Amino acid sequence: MRILLLCHSFNGLSQRLYAELARDGHELSVELDIADTVTEEAVRLFAPEALIAPFLKRRIPESVWRSVPCLIVHPGVVGDRGPTALDWAIHDGETEWGVTVLQAEAEMDAGPIWAYRTFPMRQARKASLYRHEVTEAAVAAVREALMKLAAGEKPTPLERHPAARGSWRPAMSQDWRRIDWQRETTATIWTKINAADGFPGVADTLFGVPCHLFDAWPEGRLTGAAGELIARRETAICRATVDGAIWIGHVKRAGGFKLPATAAFAAESAHLAEAPLDSWQAASWQTWQDIRYEEEGAVGYLHFEFYNGAMSVRQCQRLQDAFLWAASRPTRVIVLMGGEDFWSNGIHLNVIEAAASPADESWRNIVAIDDLAEAILRCESHLTVAALRGNAGAGGCFLARACDEVWVREGVVLNPHYQNMGNLYGSEFWTYLLPQRVGWKGARAIMQRRLPMLAQEAVFCGFYDKVLPTAGFSAQVRACAQALVADFSARIARKRARRARDEAAKPLAHYRAEELAAMRQNFYGFDPSYHVARWHFVHKTPHSWTPLTLARHRRAAIGRVGAEGFFDHDQNPPALMPI
Image 1 (cartoon, rainbow, N blue to C red):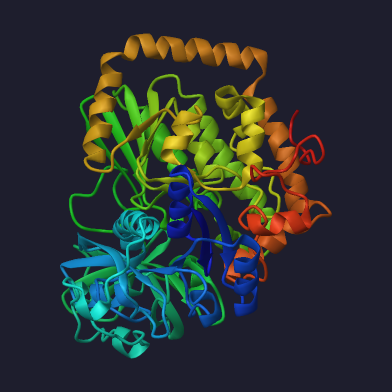
Image 2 (cartoon, rainbow, N blue to C red):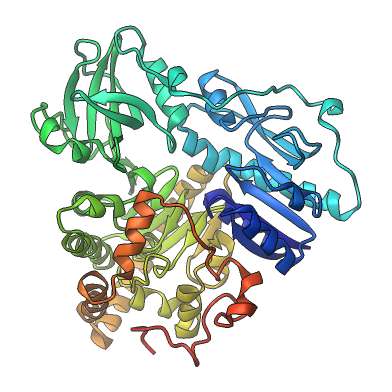
């Protein structure tokens, strides 16, 4: 089918649906929801057989939903209506929730039902539930809806649907989210911040300054007077509750953007007592620990739970220290597990934007992540594995590839390209790691295509090594890691020989110098594209147009992009791309 995706932004769910439906053989194009007239034009240009809206903040214009079937992906059970469905589900302690695909009509979320899926709720941030349970349910429900549409079936009116149990709920206001630090328990506060995570956060104050709170985690040992700020640890600040304490990892000050709590309140938090952990080993009590290590026989597992997958200078340096420490252990395999939602998305654009000199901070950040990648590449004592249970993007994709093996969970979405961020050239040794896997022609296609890639595609093209199922992913990782231990001697010998051959042919230092020379131009050169793109990304400015890589229906008029979604290299060779 010809399908137009209409979305507020090309977020994780939109990317997953795009990639899955393309794999199913559908002809796809994307239009960002900028204005009704723009949407109407997109429908005229593409003439879709169906329009799918996986992430919208406005109604679809009547002129569109009357002319083409418009399928709305709503993160709620059948009958649930309103703009903050998942927020209310977390707030109300729902044990089961779902996703409904319904047809757009005049009344919001009240159209007839095409398909639905349900899932058990876990205690987690809203953004995490959205990236995992909601996304998996949405993919399944959209596929069912499209099959029914293609077969000529009709949707079921909401009032006659046997699974209908939801109702209209208004947008959750900050009155509902407000925290009473003098009365509410840690569990209640954690639930409130979880229900607002991602957006909009919980309106509160820290150090007497208004801000919004995100990224919370309970603390099992520290205590203090309810509401008192009692400690800091790396990026987080600990605040006492009536029955314990809770860590606040990220905040957004009025008029600003989301930052690690100790960065947003650097001067104020410096006066708090530091509460360091004794080692990289996983703590034996509930606490906030962004880097933790556990060991099972001859395998060490290194977890790094960095919010949204962004890695600042300090985080890169600490993770490198943790990796080198893990490599000193009497084990044979190190598995880098990343975080639950993201493995890594590369350098920390928000911290960079907040720096006195974003260019200097960008340089320090890319050098730090290169140091980490090089430490992994030069590790000859252990076999290394990147186990991606969460998504990865840009430098994070190549940081993972620095490992000897990359195992990726089915359903993970990868964005192994840099150029969407103002034509960044990229580093993390990608010019060494990618061509040896897919060749230079394949490398050009991946880097210029600027579209999401599913785990299966990454393995099929040779970029990554193995897809593991979502169900039992951790157990599968452990079983595969133990298999590496059994074959350690032969594998480590081959690894050392290969690294020696590659170093003799072209030292890692040369790849690094070439990439960083290009990155220096991005950061300090005459073209400000990276700095402009970063500013818009961090400040979340509204889109004013849809990139041609997504809006294939607009390419003919522009005439610059080929049918495969990347530039014709004979006519438009990308700047600085090695040939």
